[in-house]
Length: 133
Image 1: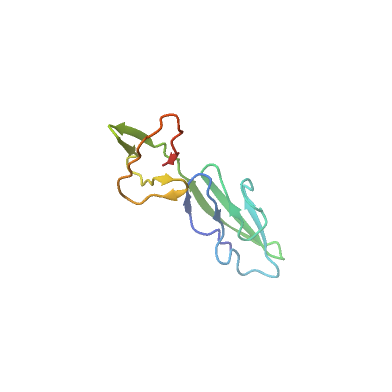
Image 2: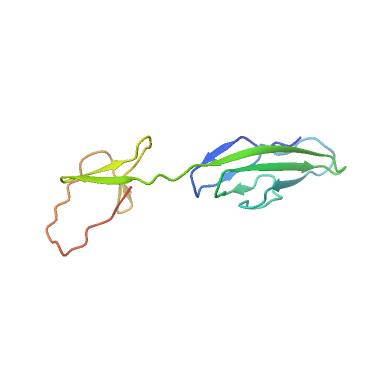
């Protein structure tokens, strides 16, 4: 019996391991595995390959035993969309406008906890540090 695993939702660029635990049971002798489509998989013949799809994809797992008996199972990987945040300045304050989403502020590679972060410009020639959202 083939077990392609449970459906998964991913953010763009992320990956997931496909297949159940185990991906195939029963049958006679050694089981072989074939995943279709094979694009964006670490291997099309592993029982539990890593998938990094660029778009939402339905993967079919075909498990075949030594007697050429086979079974199949399908798993859906849904790839979400990236959010483009809008940064708005009102006076001396920056606001992130990302409706319906969670967001984080990062500075010099560190996550900022909630609060106010004043930055005083003492030298207009100096480049300000980068903030990422």
